[in-house]
Image 1: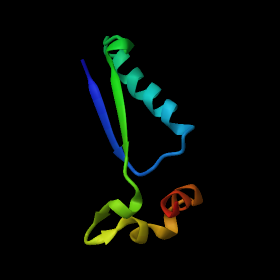
Image 2: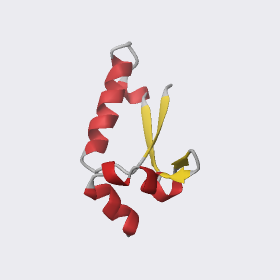
Image 3: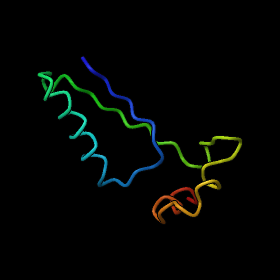
Length: 74
């Protein structure tokens, strides 16, 4: 059954269960049992993600909440 892979910057721990639940609900609304839905969250540090030749840790520095920038310094 469905396996949903999410590629994202690091997320706050509290947000992950909400994301998993809401994605599962999309499938259950289509008649697919929740037990058949798998959600995998792949988090990539901003230093390891880039576009247009620039690291996202630099490109989006002004828009990154403190929780994310603190994580990349660890």
